[in-house]
Image (cartoon, rainbow, N blue to C red; front, side, top):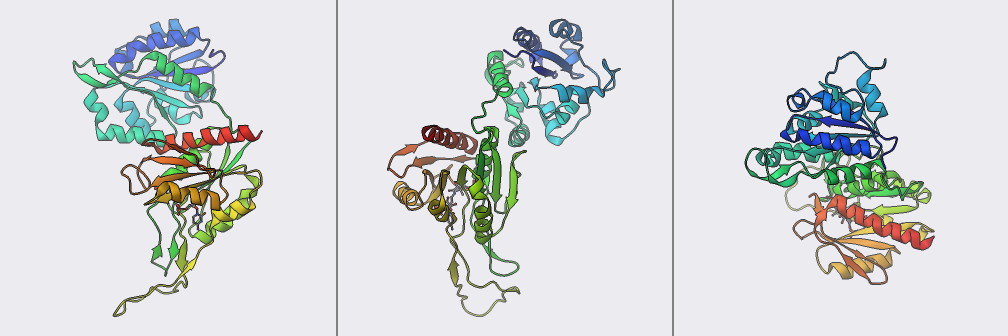
Length: 400
Ligand code: PMT
């Protein structure tokens, strides 16, 4: 099943290291070319000899050992790898990778590889729930590293909790997913808009909204993982796009309008997650507006409705909007889906806990112009993005 796939198994210093022996044996049986890398602490739990015998390859334990073949070995292996797995992964190793450290063979391989990297953490429960470890894991996930487990149960330190190395069958299933990813959006161009717009009043002030860009960046990432070529047109945000996603930064609604209009025709799927300002200040002061006695009245002009414009122009494209509502969510969203000629709209009630702006989760309903509604429970924005593409892929298949 893994025939001809080069799999690097990194093993770190955890009591669960002994389970890596079984993992290597299972990978070999599936036909993989397995290369084991042991950290210094892993060598206190396992001997290279066992792994060498099972993998039928030299086991790497040092960064500066004599290379087995003449190339810079850690780079050679990083380049050859189809998958790098770290099983078990300790809090220490995860922290080092998050910090960008590369001071041994395993961390240099992880740093230098373009292959997917899968971590199966194993550690004491209190260590696992420590906010530092959780932040490190969240940050690595955001950058595209994949985690599986840990599981819940009795731990070697005598306590119960989440921290056990997850069952190897689950690790192997995840490895198969990463080695043979489905790419149903191969050869498809996807345009995603994300984040807020900023409408300047003067050189220091602007009108904007609470969008962080998270939802749109999750949509762009998912499109890329499904094989699409992705253009993300983004308002101001601190978030970095998923590696491989092409990004165009804009600031105002009018800039977003021009950028979208310049690119939409090349794309087969357009998803407008951005929270675009409907109005902008009628005039923009060149100088900082001075404080005066009494109130200040602002006059606002309408911004173009980018999505409505695309709805009028669209040909074969699949056009998906978002609706941020604070009342009568389904009715308002259905109205927008019809008016803007959308394939469907993703409605979220932004007053609901765990939904809408800024957080990592959302609670959405897909509302179709014909009136059907599909409501999803609370889930991560990454998972919402997965559901959106399931729907889009169904629609594309129906059109073919
Ligand atoms: O970025 P996050 O912090 O993760 O938050 C996510 C989100 C709440 C911003 C997102 O889930 C969301 O709801 N996005 C749509 C926000 C919005 O502007 O909704 P709306 O109902 O005002 O607009 C409807 C649709 O028309 C949207 O697809 C919007 O991009 C589009 N629109 C709106 C106005 C305008 N002038 N041009 C547009 O294209």
